Amino acid sequence: MTKLRLGVNIDHVATVRNARGGDNPDPVRAAQLAQAAGADGITAHLREDRRHISDDDILRLSQTLTIPLNLEMAATDEMLNIALKARPHAACIVPEKREERTTEGGIDTAGQHNRLKPIVTALGGAHIRVSMFIEPDRRQLDASKALGAPVVELHTGAYAHASGAAREAELEKIRVAAAYGESLGLEVHAGHGLTYDNVKAIAAIPQIRELNIGHFLIGEAVFIGLDESIRTMRRLMDEART
Image 1 (cartoon, rainbow, N blue to C red):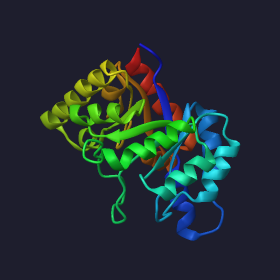
Image 2 (image 1 turned 60 degrees about the horizontal axis):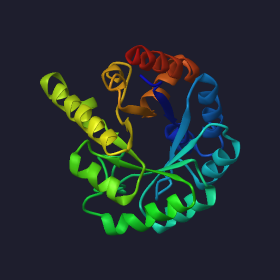
Image 3 (image 1 turned 90 degrees about the horizontal axis):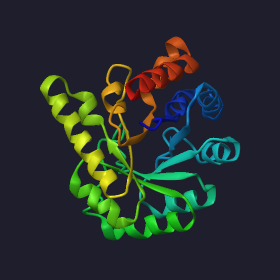
């Protein structure tokens, strides 16, 4: 199997910073440490309410990183303009609600084609690789393909939060979706709610090329350091892959 890439989401370093204001801890420093620890890319979600990552963070990340930056963004004109200015390697389009604590599910690519198509086209025209954050569902995969997005990221939240037979059922949905997505010519990624305890089953799915993990890694870093947190996740992913 191909090596599975790890994208590290550094949003919640900014959450801690913003709890007190000021400059520390700096998410750009966290991104640099993640890169040194073996991250293949950095993910950051610039939310409309700027609750964690800021516009300046995105600018500094785009100027500093030597590994790909994946900008998670809502499908709005404001975020499109920021992406076109920052020129990240990739942009992952996610649903966004002001009242949610974290992204609660995939974007409805099938039901929002007309709104999403101009954004996908503009990003692609700027040589920004577009990813759609979707549920592991054939209809959403077909719609992502129709939009012209080369990448999909499968939402693994339902799997991560389930247990027993329900978790196995969610895992099977992801396996089927990953295989179907690859058959359409899409590059398949996955993420949300992944931890040391549940990552291996997802990492073992051969069609998945990248995992994006953030909250858990930043939480573990409080206890064991960011370097060790990422290296442990990298090792578990590699073990599952081989």
